Length: 235
Image 1 (tube, rainbow, N blue to C red):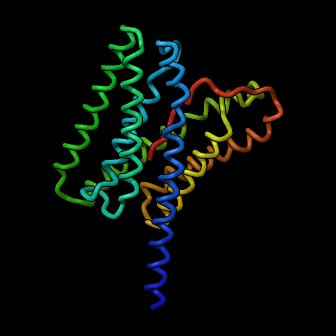
Image 2 (spheres, rainbow, N blue to C red):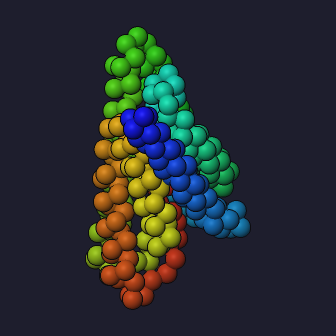
Image 3 (spheres, rainbow, N blue to C red):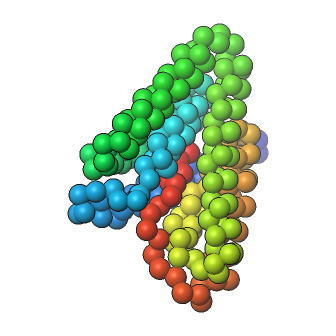
């Protein structure tokens, strides 16, 4: 009976962490909306870059695929958060393509096709692996590597904050939401005993904690709201 109770508590905790992660992730997914309001209002993308949304879309698609029953059963909350994330990133990319100048538009469209091409190769290639554990290992490794590269990207923001002694380009609520989302999925991965989820989230949690510490350390310095959300993390 005690084993059953322990399993039940673990499953409830896992689901609660996953749901919390989905909620915090939604806040991140809508964070670029002010940027796109500005783009639409100006009728131009100005100096904004569309690359973060391209990379985030690829990350969402890979993690979405990992969370499906064909790869890692009982990871529905990984699938839901990345499905929503992929939809948001695709909308942002379409809007960006509508307002970006022609030379950059062709490059952006080419990168979008490359994302779908890479994802298609991963999807078809993994399905050709008949051994389910090997298939999970391959997609899990790609998912983990993608997330690690995504979480490492704020390092240049951290360096910029230390160099300028200003948190202008590191909004507090964005950093806090990112920390809460990653910490939630870290707990989810630990309770699931899924290294492909929690390994990348350990790094992500540490990096976002550093951002929060730096924010409070430098918050008295002159700062303004950042011009753009550089990368929106998916799961």
